[in-house]
Length: 553
Image (cartoon, rainbow, N blue to C red; front, top):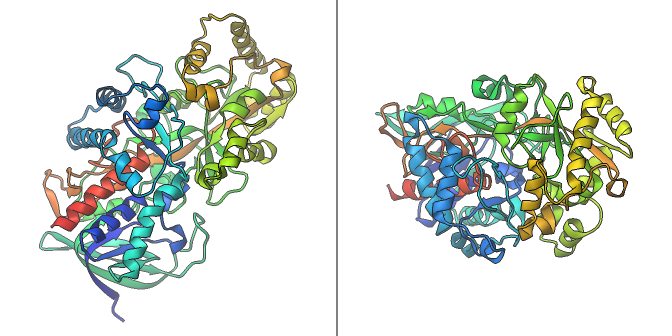
């Protein structure tokens, strides 16, 4: 029996945010689109649906209302100081970075507002850096949370695609796994692959790979928007760079298993050039999900800056590796310790004010646009409901009344035998002595006081400096932290029209790429490090560019 055949103007592979945006743009331009994905339709929206919905804006009204003075020049200084572009392959990533900065400064916010997307009024300060003005990090708060988190950012584009489907201009094909791109006389003219067995798997849950049929799709243009490699630990370890030390023997996973990188070799076989595969973004504040959805499901703590960060032996991390300051710098340092985990030590007062968990499902107040719950969870007494659930049921949390009891609880967890209890006591007590004066040589405490000069931090993100061992601030809490896989920062090299480029730098006719599959644009728009709020935004921008360019041919 011949494979099922489809014919369309544009084929989009992957229905995450970049794929939805590309499809919506192509439909708005009058094109017919076939949208395929290997997962059941319950996963429409991909990783973005699970996200916190953070977006990077420059000189936004939200920033200005909080007294933040931002500018395109300052943001460019931060982006390029963070990216560290230093390769011949960085030609297009640099150009994409310039284009994205313009987008984030000018059109991005108004474009989203026009689609009904709103934003939480308090701007977050992620990746604070702690180096010099030209080093890594955000000089000012730029992390804007979508009102509705990930589902809120997905919704308008999903609605546009489903409207196109109802009107007969979009065909959505779940359980269609692309295994090859069709190349005819040097032009990509579509794709072929396997039809997988129907699956009732819930969003994010692993689905079967049973093959029941085959398919072929002929298209005038093909857009690869299939995501990165974060769900494939074998591939993460294979591409792990030496500059980050040895890959961890154990990791938790911040994305569903279907984020497997399978379209990268398929794209390369059709002539696309893959670059910067060794650039990747993994977090060091991962915790095991007590209520997992996908295999090895981990959740990232979005920490405020007050917790004391210790390595597996109990030694405090060096300046400026404080919570929320330098993700990859901290990862590289911890990989050099020879252990796969580290620790936060903090007080109840800190966890109430500073702990937020990444993910739409971990933030029911913001995701559900529930103002009453928001006020209770962010401003009320006690930890938020999701954080309290981890304190009560999470395998990585230790809650005790005294430091001796806390150390004993830490040592009782797997791997805890390497912890030097005397060192923990030395570090925490020394830190606490620095609190008694308004001046200090402890750089973290100085940064806490500086952070609270920003209204957003003082209101909901930074606890007033206090002695962690003060019984009035207790109980004491320790959290065992794991490396959590997340994002690919490299991918298919593309020009500023989203066209996939070949080994010689020439466009591969008929082939485009967007989202994480393209390193969020150009094959690596972030360089070595990301400024946060730029992953969802990168999907929006690169998906829009590719959808419009493919439709214009």
